Image 1 (cartoon, rainbow, N blue to C red):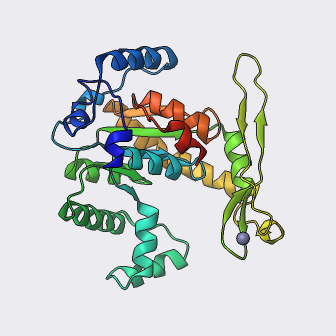
Image 2 (tube, rainbow, N blue to C red; image 1 turned 90 degrees about the vertical axis):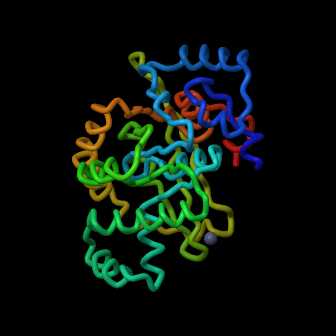
Length: 289
Ligand SMILES: [Zn+2]
């Protein structure tokens, strides 16, 4: 498996589950990475030792809409060889299927309502069971749990090792959401925002490059009707209000890793791997992809 070769130098004892699965490790490299991680991180050490020996990681990604959690969760899932399970995708898949929940879901979504905990749990259980029969081990959940109740239910059915809370300064997040453009012809997603915040009073600056469309899409770009400043800010407010108790739930269990995105993908990806004590040999390559 390519992922086995490409991966991962993790802290030996803490990540014994991964190493047991065939990842190589060397004590020299481990100490190097420990040093580097220790010098670049301000948060306290992670409860990574809780990862059991007999399975892969079971992680959760939290973060405001637009922060890019799908991107980072997707990359990590490929790196670790675990499925990236997004509840948004599960809902979309069920909607486009003839599954038993499809018509019920269509009714909810068409009225702009939130899908209930029960339905989300059903979809997620179905997905996890299907994965298990295919021999999948571990997962990275994206967009779940969204409420305390979901977190409690999840805790009842499986162990979560780590919850990564991705955060981006609100001014950058707002600019990023307002810069989103979709090609009306091919459906491609682009971003015209060039975020360049100067560092001041000791706080670091931040640069995030735009994601410009190719020339043939340029004249066909449209903005989603709900990407206005007012709607985006309301989305942040609702998210923050709803997510705070979920963050607290995991913080009190010492499972929460707060991660402030330092900028665009290449920079953030490297730092995120450091924070997780992971190492990607093809980091440069995958960051540029
Ligand atoms: Zn296009």
